[in-house]
Image 1: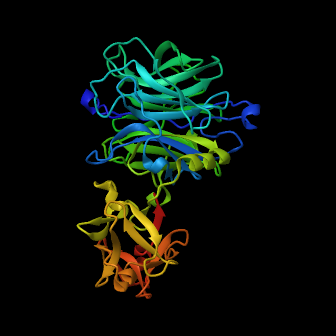
Image 2 (image 1 turned 135 degrees about the vertical axis):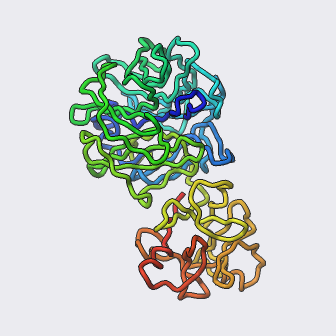
Image 3 (image 1 turned 180 degrees about the horizontal axis):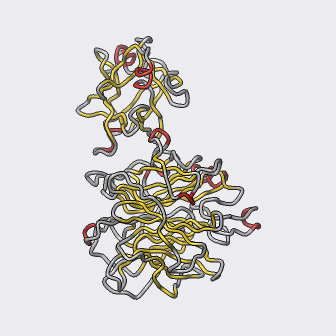
Length: 465
């Protein structure tokens, strides 16, 4: 959430799963801390909402995506919401998901529809779910009695010393600037003891808590459009001290710390605070160091137009069940290997790679269908202009209407191969000019012979979402 209209230049974010000591009967293992998960976890779920540059994809319902590595994501339900708020402002921002002590999930979200920054609410949206396939008990939850302020970016954590859950959120209290507040609950139906959790003496927002890493708890937040960390050996309000080196990519908000389930790596996700909806990721192998290194954009891909995500570990069974329930998209996007901020799209019927985000975002969505000339190959059907396909003409790729001729079919058919620059990616060889591959040149797509390392990189793409 961006609160720039409130004069702070700050914004909001959600969290990675707070520590949940899940009963053995429910899961077969114990959670060790935020993001480390119980032993059965092998995948991740993400919750988010969507916006785009012209707000063509502004949707303030609850969206879900899944991932097996926590870096590359499959949007569910065709990137449409799985549930939409009906109370309060009638929309959400900044959703958060956590597995509770009993093994079920709770979803929290800011009560705000779109960019109506004048809507101040003492409430947040809450859903219960046993499996993230059904959502029950929808309600508003009151967090405090303060007036003329907000309750942004709610995130929850289990506080074993208090035997209660804490709910973190951003509000302006008597200090006159945004602070991280906490209210406590046992059931996510009523709350008590609202108080300041963290106030370093200046405007902050978007608290994200990671618990119990080497006996230390880490709180990441946004200050001056940068992501900064504080730490404490307790969960007591007022006990956290800033310590980390700030990171940012332009104006950045919404920190989310995610632990790899297969290595000692930690990932820090951050979101641009404009409606563009671009995430950047930093990596660390030592949270105690407070230093992060920017991750190559080749290594991660966010759900299309996603904003302000919350991420939590899930089991392989939950991962498979979510895909079975909601389905993977019927379309793909193609990401450039050597310009990983750019995606294949059509513009004025010409094919090119442009930097995400852009509208119409549907220009970058493709159905990879059986090849028109040979079903063992592939053709690229436009999602938003479905009578048109990518085809080469004088070696340049363009989006043309299928005229039903054998020439068009051959021009629009390609053989998918292992990526010429990286075998885990893909390259596409022309069906009727088999010495030529799709590659970009000055950002325009064409078919060319490929021989050098630079040309192989130009001809390599990631087929994802």
